[in-house]
Length: 91
Picture 1: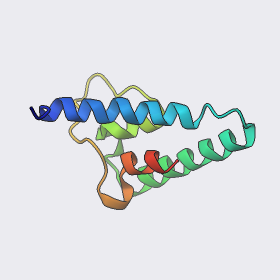
Picture 2: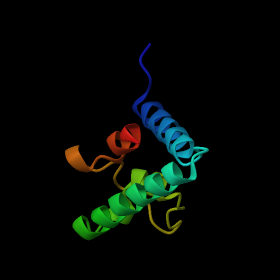
Picture 3: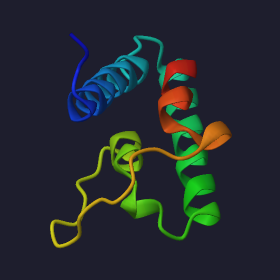
């Protein structure tokens, strides 16, 4: 049986968060610094390109933030080359 769409999205969030945590938990300090720098560059790029960046759930996964509780997240991930899920897999 196929997963429900919401379950698939939740799995992607969980898997991405796990991969991201693994990427920044490397024992080599230089690797951690480089990874954190790449994450910051990606977040800065998305903030500059998308005025509504905070409406994307995967943005909050990337920066380990909690969305504003007064606002519903209306979008999941950025399109194509800006996809956070793809970026996290590349770390």
